[in-house]
Image 1 (cartoon, rainbow, N blue to C red):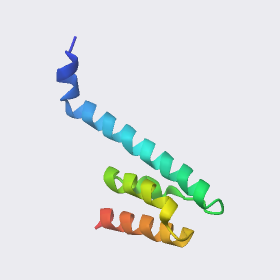
Image 2 (image 1 turned 30 degrees about the horizontal axis):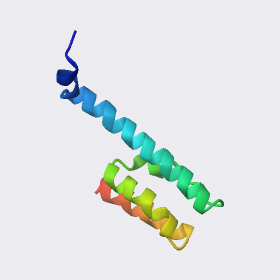
Image 3 (image 1 turned 180 degrees about the vertical axis):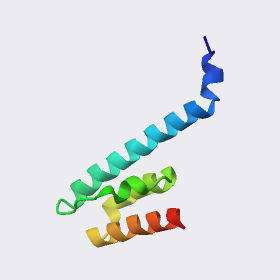
Length: 84
């Protein structure tokens, strides 16, 4: 059996934790956006964002954004930055 500390240092473990964190941040962004902008339906574009810090910051910022268009632009900018 692999010791827990050794497992936590493995790249596989780190990948699983990161993917879980990304999924959670994406789900939170969908929920917060739906609460703030009920008419807005975020598409698959959010799933193309892999920067956890940026997703978490966007979750925090969503309630201060002036409108749904600003949120859509921020998401598009994040996607574009990752594809560059």
